[in-house]
Image (cartoon, rainbow, N blue to C red; front, side, top):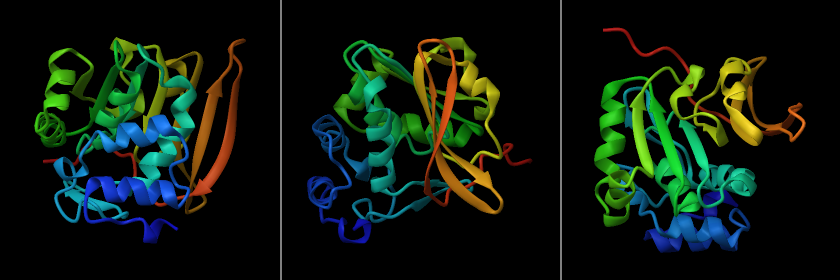
Length: 223
């Protein structure tokens, strides 16, 4: 149904995603309605498809962002702390920040400065984004996302927007108890979403979900 969900406006896109069962939670729908994808996707922003944003990075299709939000939703409560690894153009970072306000904090991590700069500039295009950045609800940093961002840990929820070569232990270590990690993982030339939960007793479970195709979570380009 994803291919039928594109629209002529942000509202039409989100309504189509909901109509096609790709958004089922009202809180996710409201948050995505409140963040205009045109501020974050340079071409055909209301198409339900991934798009390049330069620097060997992409912005995922809207239905994948919806899936991530719905998976993490039990941990996205007002005041929660969230880490968005591979924040790219900043779109999902902003949506996550809408889901944890008031009082929440989302840190977007990118491995090259131009992508950090893009995320900041895009988020500041809207009054809502500017307010979140000025109040500390959104912060973008340059770092190796595979190592997380210990400065603001632990996190209620962590989203990874690029395919990891394995289960990076620093990310699991930076989860709260309880907490949830949503990440694509490369396995035998394929990629699957894994939902990793850290339970109240500190135990960790991994649930394998749908097959996907993301850009790899890698070192920053040289030069």
